[in-house]
Length: 234
Ligand code: MN
Image (cartoon, rainbow, N blue to C red):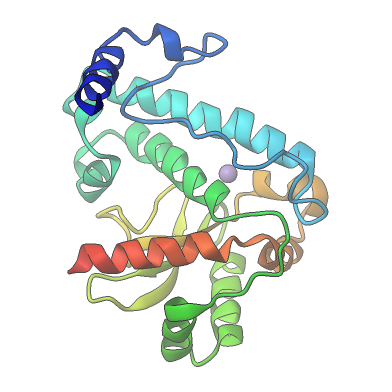
């Protein structure tokens, strides 16, 4: 039975893209456009529904579509996106911008959740305390990374290749997996500080948006990513 299911799914996977095409939008079987794991209004009042709808259904969709177009017919079509990023300087700028935009937003949606008052716990909490002194000191460093990023970009909590946590920021749609990043590692927590992420509700007050972001972090997801990244190091 198991063999039959595997065979069946292989057959289905081999069909042309039609069954996956939704509203004539572009889709790929290698690079998935993930569903938003909650409703547009789920992060209210910290992140408003209109921002979420435009951000997810237009910005994120555009990065995704443009990324698929940029890799179409190239070796990248069959590559893991992490491997593309590891050699991103060798590929066209459109792949860097749109592949980054697609990947970074996928992490961002997943590392948020409706306000649950979650805090880091377990191994991750201990590692944060060891690295930054306290959870509050980490928050300060992370907020500063987001607040001082000039123009558009991202703030990150990542794990480096020696297993140490670090906070950084990247411009535009770059991320710590890219060989062009100043500090390289596995991203665990992503915060979008492009104006499109907060301008409708917070206008020019990026610091207020960053303060609100603490209420919607999905720490369970961040911890899962931490455990996975640690295992990959071994
Ligand atoms: Mn964005």
